Structure formats: C-alpha cells, structure tokens
Amino acid sequence: MSRDARWKTLLELLVERGRLEVEQAATELEVSAATIRRDFDQLAEQQMLVRTRGGAVVHGVSYELPLRYKTARHASEKHRIAEAVAGLVAPGEAVGLTGGTTTTEVARSLAVRSDLSAGSPALTVVTNALNIANELAVRPQFKIVVTGGVARPQSYELIGPLADGVLGQVTLDVAVLGVVAFDVVHGAAAHDEAEAAINRMLCERAVRVVVAADSSKLGQRAFAWICGAELVNTLVTDTAVDQETVRRFEEAGVQVMAV
Image (cartoon, rainbow, N blue to C red; front, side, top):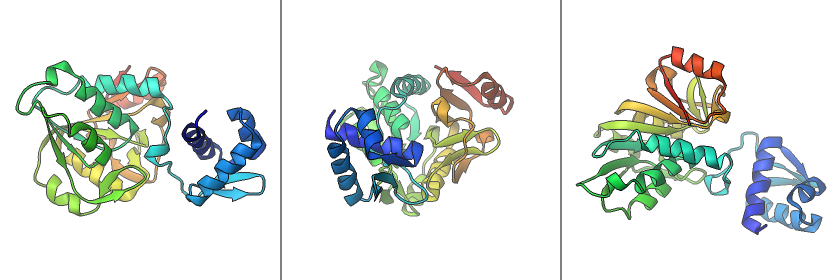
C-alpha cells in the first residue's frame, strides 16, 4: 500500500472512530507499527490529526475530512449515482454543480456523454468548485462559469459574498447538490455554513434541484442547513436505501431514484 493510500485510510478510520492506536492501525493496514508511527507523526505535522501516547485522535472537536484525502468509499455507488444524475441533464441546459466527491463524479459523467460533444454550448456549467471547473474547462463544448469567492481548502469550493454577484445574475435549469446529510424533516445540510449558503443560492436560482447522495447520508443531520426537502425535486441514491426512507421522501414530494 502506498503512503497516500495509507494516509487516506488512516484519516477515514479516524473520522469514523475518533481515535486509533498504532498497533490496531498496523494490523488493519497490514504494515509495521513503525510505519504507522511515522505516518501519524507526518499527519500531525500537517495538523490533520493529534498524536497521543500510542496512537492518534481527530484534530479538533468538529472534523471534516478534506476532499483530497477522501478515498473511493462507496465508489461504485457514487459512480452509478453520478451516471444517473448526468442522465437527467438535457443538452443545452444550464447546470449548477456544488463541490464534493459525488458531484465531481457527476461532472466526469457529463464530460463523457457522447450527445454533449457538440453544440454552442452543449452545456453551461455554473460551479463554485475549483476542481470541477478545472476538469471541465478543457472541454470546449462546455461553457464554464465559476462563481468567484474565497477558496475553502477542505472542499475546493469558493465561498463568501463575492459569489453573490455572479449567482444573482444567472438562472439555472438544474442544480445538483452534493450533501453531507439529507433528511425529510431537517433538509439538506453541509459541514460549513458559508459553503451551505452558496449551495442554497444555487438551489434558489434553479428550476429544479437534484440531490446526489449515497444512502449513508440519508436520515442524517449536519451543522449547516442548505435547503428544506420541499425544495428538492429528485433524490438520486443507491439501492441500499431503506424503503421506509424512500416512502418518507416520496410523501414529502421528492422523487427517489435508487440506482
């Protein structure tokens, strides 16, 4: 296992459990304890975790794993979700994409659609995610609009009032939301309030709103509210979703696609 792969796995385990012991991590990753100690020390230098006697704990009280360290957890589910979401977009439409691993996969699925290879433009993409804009900017058939704002290193998203000027002047056919949590009662949510505010504005500028979220995020709550379930037209998730959860969303007026 490469160093990058070890670091991603270690950080994800820390987010899940809150604490990791050296010997425990070495056993799970099938490497030596010395290697884990060295990894913990290097990650602590980057303020990604806090070293303890014999192990490590997550850095801070509220912890969000930076996008660059997120592994392909639920990778197959996210790929299927992304393809399904991309299929909901018609040629010539204006699409808003928030940041996140699932929406990044949506952007990649849009990029390889054969029916979006021509036109002027074949698609207009409005995003506050630098990584998505970077990936799609090389596609000449796409018109890419970046919101502006201050870069948030955890998610590569631009946040703050500078984005208001751009979003206040556009109208979108569809906004695709990547979320940390989505619940019938508590709505869609993110970790960061400034990020949530930009995502909320994207929703308000769109004719229809699609939430792209694997089933592990459903029925969950998070700190920063984006929008209520009543504003969401479609939820695209994976087939592991509980049928009771599906029923509750559908009763709230949200079309559920489990792929």
